[in-house]
Image: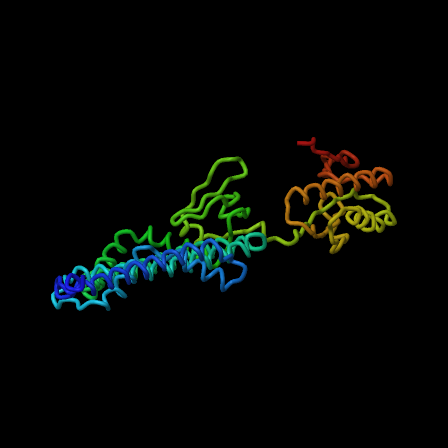
Length: 361
């Protein structure tokens, strides 16, 4: 038995090969069992535990095998001419494992941030998703460069070549690249987020999706509007969802000939009609001017809600209240009129005055 264990194979005795095999099984198998136990028992009750669990869940079994093989290799004398492909393969496994760890950490961070902000700030949710995707893309790009370096590729020359080629491609697709950078600006600066009602130029719609090249809106009439991100940022954007209150200005005209005391009471009537509504904040009511065919009163108030339907309901309530109050006080609403003075021919006495009232259009 002793003689059999002392027989050498590839420069090492059978005993040393057995020790190496046992070391591999113990280390690799033990790490695999430990990974299974941790995922079964450790709960993400704290941030540290959650990070630890994410790191363990993103540890690949092939990496555990490489670790076991590394420990086992200390029990034997490796020949000088170990195939280079074996070392390269082990190095690539380690590089990929590091990439998986970073990928898992970034995913955990972005998902955690999204959960925190999902109810309070939709713009931050969009930013976190985009930022997480950009970071993960950068991580795997660096992993790819490291893998090529491990394979013996001249990474410096390749990166330089990519730079020159990138310039040529950028010139060919500069409009597309402009839209891509515009999408990054939209995501980071957040002039609008999904769900906002916005106006871009003459187009009004609710944001349905913010893509890499285009943004999609659902118009008030129902059709989908697809607009380039670059075109959107070069236009004036009105975001109605971020309106905290709406300023409303309207004018009312009453007939000439209304008694002075009634004219003086009209601002108070208008103020009461506005204050009856909710939620509003009145700013001012004034007898503004003598118009061409009416005494004009200018009114300004604020609707303390951004929704357009709320504003229209309040304005309708004001109009109905004023109509009732003016009818009860026998105040006439003015409408356009004009008076024509006709001069009689020579020899005829007097003149004729004729008042015309345009028919309602």
